Length: 273
Image 1 (cartoon, rainbow, N blue to C red):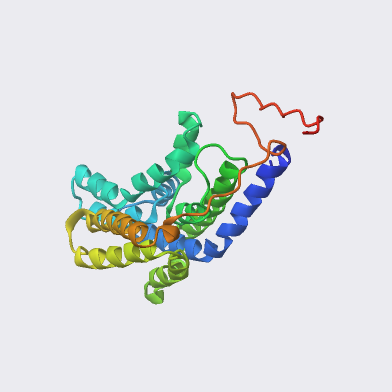
Image 2: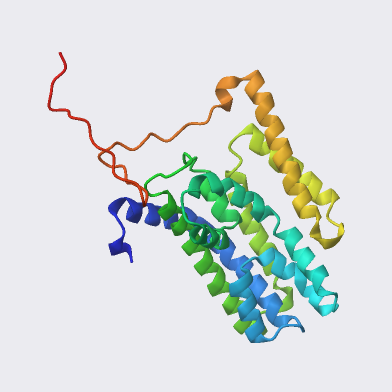
């Protein structure tokens, strides 16, 4: 597959794999916990658990709905809870939209399925300019393939080998602790620090709300806190609010998106007088 890619896309894809590789241990631990929980629940058979792992691909919502299945609550309650937990992905998709708006709808839908918390975090840290850029989609796919593969391998292993893991091993806590360094490393600005701090406080205060609605409330609070912090910083210290932009690709190396003609290179044979 890599042989069919251009040199730019091949390097970007491998860069995406390297970028996400430090998070593989955390993803594997979290997927293992989710697989074990599904297998040890009394509401899912092994084939159902395998199908849920591949189709849903969202550990938080999978764990959230298992007690609801066990309690035999109405389907609309289960769907609403899963929607509340996964509402953050709407925000992630909105963040990716300016980067991949030139792609056809079906490819954007596929990108949306593979998007996730860590993937979006790693992608956003690169500060890509919006619109088409050579290697940007390939970098995203390097992140996505690495995350999806590690999640599915660990989740399926947890489902099939659940009987080998005692309930008191505390794997869920291990997965959470493994994610903390990634979250801390993403706090690079004052606005991000404000967003994380406010989100943590709101999540704790809203922890007991039904349908896991505390999670989207914390996400919205984080967005508001980050936006307000950006506006305050822009007024107090405008230079700090400016984000560095990646240099534009030269005409010799710039790739052309599908459906567009390649730009003509200016005539440089004449010397200026």
